[in-house]
Length: 629
Image (cartoon, rainbow, N blue to C red; front, side):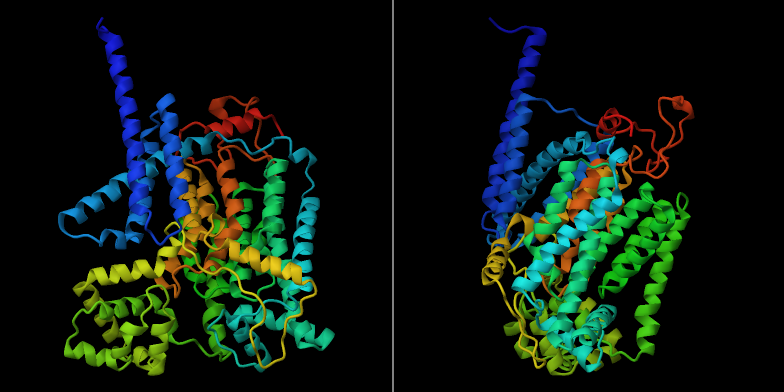
């Protein structure tokens, strides 16, 4: 008997839906097959494919709601971005074939990749809107100082034990020793952030005055670094507690900060990247407190200004990232919070003065121009390596600064140091400085002549920061050979051996995948914008740091260069999930009760978008339903 009317229509709809699910799962298998030979961390791709299969399987049994037009558009854009990232980073897999086969493979890569990422995003996004992480009565029992001291004490004790039992007086690489050498000799160079070097000098001098030993002086700085990092982590934990985060999640965040191997090892490593990572977390926490009105306004403003200044000064290229942050804050808060904008501009201006005129006044030697041109240098080297032609005039110009016969043999697609060494062999810095216009014109001309060489060079030089993840060293150990008698003393060899083994195990894992970490921030930014949440602001500083690396990184996948993304990730992820359409239980001055005020007379809650008439998200409704603070 043939089904009639509506029954037949419903049956056909169900068959079509199931056929679409099977087709999407097939596309996922095709994508995983195509991308399997990638040099990137395959476990990241496998995890994404597994999520796509799970999302499509669930849609077989439960139809998903279509969502608003804004939501659909936002998720499509995010899926396209991630698809382009993975396709571009794996361009070598697409170049292995030619002709029509290449076009078919590229099309399959794009279509299957988009299917995978769109399925994952459609699955994840609704979950981020309904999760409830806040307990509304937390504020009544909260003692912020106690939370801070507990977190600070636990983190500091763990790191101090590691320092004195397994890594005394600290971990010093060639970069570390370069700064120590400046401190001891007094011959300063701004190759490393000069104010970080001055900070090392401050505590080194204190250690020498107190103990009279070079080893003890270095250890004094390491102790100070441990305490500063512990304070930044504890401040973030305290702020989450004041925001009403559930106790189990607070403990989880605290344990991540205290026991994650790279946090412990980095706490005793003398690198600019360590304190800068703490400054990134500190700044984002202060921004969140100011924006959500948590704690005392004057104290928040003071800490915000100090954290912004530290952000700018503790990394050479960080001031450029902060310019981007300042522009976003100016657009967002120029009317709502001019005080926050003013503090941002003042911090940026003071940092510019300290890094410019003050450094010049102190007669500190500047690093050469070669150091800041890693990406253009690599692109020109790739042009030459690929066998592209040079005119006689171009050959003469390049021959002034580099030995062209050695470029092809020395070029490393992911590391600019060999090419920089060739440039320095000819003492090229002065020539580059004197002929900037000529070399800029040459750079543009070669790029227009062979754009694919430039694009491929840029991809290979930066892909570790925006695609999946790549196996690359993460931590250092020991003390590099030096002329000052600084040497490492290990009291508990088992602990030092355990740290080294854990460090090796972290290489190529999900928790140290730089590209995946960047993707998480992109999702936080995208989801917040789709939901009209101002929590997108907390994702801007880490993404701005990545943006500066895409323009000037000397290494394609250096973990320590993006350490600030890892220090801030637990805080940013949780604040994005908490949302901010409803007032926090930890706010200094809670708004009037919704129940006591007619809807038409209610004022806009802190953090809400005045231009939006959309209702609160599910997570905010759940947060309200949890009870009054």
